[in-house]
Image (cartoon, rainbow, N blue to C red; front, side, top):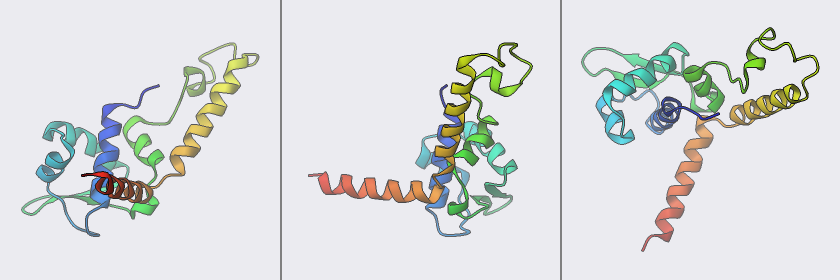
Length: 146
């Protein structure tokens, strides 16, 4: 399983929005510039985030985007599911009728356990946690720079 580019950019965009002042509207062009993303791709990324209630949009002059929730209330799992749907590691976990071996398949339980643990890890990190980690890493890099 590979996380899509859309999800990667969605995480970066939400973290960027979380670093702004509370309720500050950020222009699309500023998100594109700082996150190295094209306007068309950013639109594609933002649509599911808006639908999921993670990001809000303001239209018109001075319009743009801002977080719809507090960064502490948004998890990596929320962003992942907004972009990619429910986390499913294997087809047999999506639909019980997809595989007739589920009742005795020894790997089925392993896929389920791995999926549950991955979901728990993604759920355990908030956007606020990511902002803090990024700040700490940037501080460390500045200390190491000549």
